Image 1: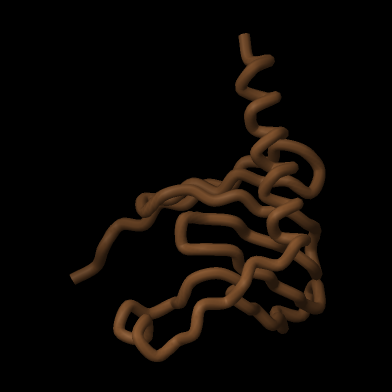
Image 2: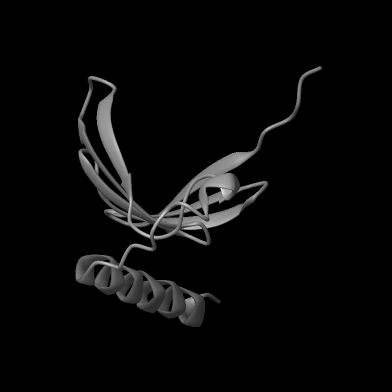
Length: 100
């Protein structure tokens, strides 16, 4: 049996996107080749070769599988991820304040 999927990516500014899906939302900062994604699951950083489909992804906060929580050590948040989150939050609040 199949299932429906929903995903939408909205460009807020160059290099700043709001990603919306059935499961929630996230913010992506960066361009093709180097992106930081911030969501309720944590911060994910992706480095890739544009146009090839080849990329490497790391999770900076949280763990990907609930059964692995007990064995996975808690990682610290990188200063760049905190800065990216603050900048994204400020941009979203600015946009919401200027909508008519």
